[in-house]
Length: 499
Image (cartoon, rainbow, N blue to C red; front, side, top):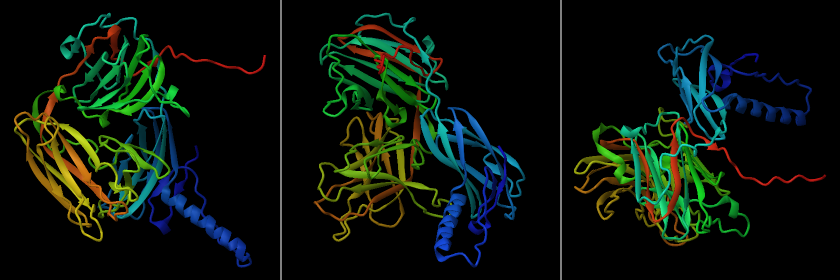
């Protein structure tokens, strides 16, 4: 590909070589007013294109692409810093201000089918951008049922630890089992955790299937019965044995299958771990939270594009007619400029709702240890009356009557902080952003949050995998540590028109 230097001093961009950029020509005096207006529109498009930057497409998970950077007329004591959107990585992360034909490599680290982001290049107040589009590699297929680690039965428990060979790596892994849950009271509950505390606990019962988020359950909807008029049910009580698979990728995305058919794909980070996953106390950590600055992945829905899932966080009520939440750009300071993102929570104005809005994260903690929660927050205030409806909270998971909270008292950005000492029986806490409901039509400022930090003693984990069984018959249970795989058998009905 031909490389040309892009330099647009009128918008203060770094000289960035990637693709082709053609500057606008001067407009001749004799051009008509109509053509002048059209060319003004074109000029605006070109300037926006320059500000947004060229697009770099990376084809394949863990694949890379490159671009060239040149720096000109920058302060020598302000090197060019490079940052990448979550799901991408960039090297190097710093270049000299007088960079000449420096090659930069971007790697797509996500298993998502399509993921967009950007590289921000900044030297002092001068910026440039490269827009990114990553195309994920489909999971390879593999039959892993031929060498089961559990060969069938109705044992109440089964477990393999690191000492027994369960040592997952950054390649990912695949879990599969076959079971008959012929009645609602029968069920299989598979679980897995790696050495970093990332894992899952699932459930398959006669009534459905899903994953646990700490103590709560989140069910999957059956895409095969979710069409117009469908109920999205699985009918696991049909007295047949069904095959379930969890393919966990290197970026901790979980691909879920039933009988070879893809059911859903979720982030393991969104689901609070099980209290018994923690093995022993660890060292003090500056920040125990996942995605504390809201620069991570998120999913949107509805015509207002509200966030229905946010990496690392539990959107407790994701019904738009109760409350809404968004990940939005927000400049806070020179360091946190318009490339910064925050969490924004709003009440649905035309109903009093049926619950407070809550965005939460479960964290494993050490009993009797003190933890400090800190966040940059504003809003959540009823405009006319001044009622304070927003809070940051710590709740114990094992006893949610225990905890502490802080009211948000201003519509200006302020740092709020609270300390909490876990009780003797506490294994997990919930960090919660809370916006109380009010009357129909209430005018409440959005509750906005950034730069969240939970400081305190961590816990350590020992890898393990297994299941709990409540009366169901398992034909087999197995796993493969060489990677994340789609099922080799994928039942389908093919229809061809004509002879």
